[in-house]
Length: 625
Image 1 (tube, rainbow, N blue to C red):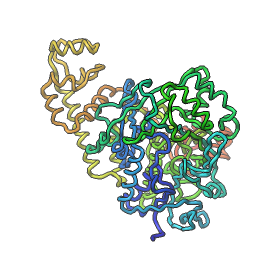
Image 2 (image 1 turned 60 degrees about the horizontal axis):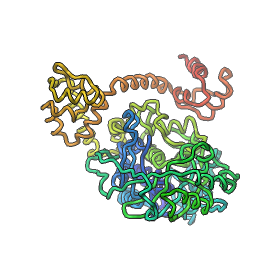
Image 3 (image 1 turned 30 degrees about the vertical axis):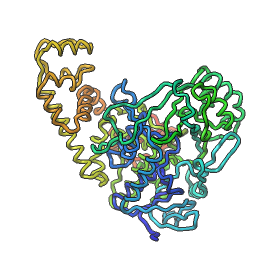
Image 4 (image 1 turned 90 degrees about the vertical axis):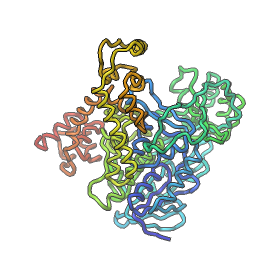
């Protein structure tokens, strides 16, 4: 068996899978090491992909040539576009998936990826020679050699699961923890800490009284994750989710047993997620609320197992069961397994470059929850960037880095390496200052050519983008040059939409700018428009993108101008220019943080928490600006 590789990826979660696949497709010889080949790309928590801002990340991964969007579409059992009542900058795709199929699709993809091999084992030591990375040593005592190693260990580093007072070592239910790496990295000077996450109970869907729930069906629209036109998200039977609520009786039971909750009796001391709190945290933090929403989500197309979203808990099993049975729809519920919390090691991400390479050990990359993030999507985005950069480091000096105005992935990575984390990091649209530019509909326009230049995007995908762009240009040109004449039925339609009637020939673009007016509605009043739309193979996607461009052009232009202004600071490189600890005119906090993070540009320095505009001005003056 081969023992020498270009890149070793440790962990086959969402970060590791994207990293290994990307690097191998680009031409590197890659070894992916996983504890269990039956759980590749396992969905440890809920069987869903996407959501607020997370859906944008998945579309970006797909636009760059990653696989998560394709695997999601092909395993989807329900799709919804969230936030459609808001502006398009907030629209976020989300899919309920078949957990087992998603994992199987990923394994099949990895097994047919050239240059990629898989080894089942756990890694407990890096092989180093005077801080020069040589490879890894596994639990079985096997040594594999590579100058580049990507650690994507998820929640496995010294992982401990909590079921009430019962504590079991492990990175996931029925899977062992990983030991050794944290201790070695700490000895090398890496800063580490502990985080906590949790997952709800799994229940038997046949024991739920669905007539007491509110059904939540999926969207019956064309939307999906992958930009490839031959990928469908309707391959599987579609299933509904269901909504129910906790009540004060259930809350009272939980409150009576808070002394048994690891989160409140001192058993868990690590940092938990703010935006996905446990039910114990909800009833404590929001004590005034007498109910909390629960989602009953199917785990697959052909299983009765369901995920009880909204009831994450580390309380003892019998307390969880007694409390949940107070919900009328769940009064006869059968638990397949209780919820639990898990504590694990992570590393301060300010110790990374934007390439995901560590500062202390050249050739070593971190991706995923090891960096303090939470979520499959955030992990996959980091893994993709790490895999690309690990490969490129052999061939080019210019790394692959996404700016904050180019991608949510760029926002996330910049947040991590510049600001660090004091709680599990989760992506939100509010984290992106240029979210009108970073919409889910235009990720291909933003990123596909970048992926093509790197070598990850195929000719087929690039051709699909170019076809879409030509169609958008044709539609915009027609809207600017073609007019419709006043018509009684058209004016009736405009009145129904709350818009004033037209009294003379009016350009289509002027009407499209009105709220509620679409190309589809106007097609019956313009033969050229009708013919153009009927000639397009991807008409629905083209129409949506074009309408957004036209209706929000002013906002888009204004945000682009702001982004371009901010880029001027990003162009001022300050690497190695200053010994920050010696600049007495800077505040003490600024000196310490600038010295620790070592920002690449003035722009990055300006985003470090605690760095004031006055501090930035001092640096600019010292540079003669």
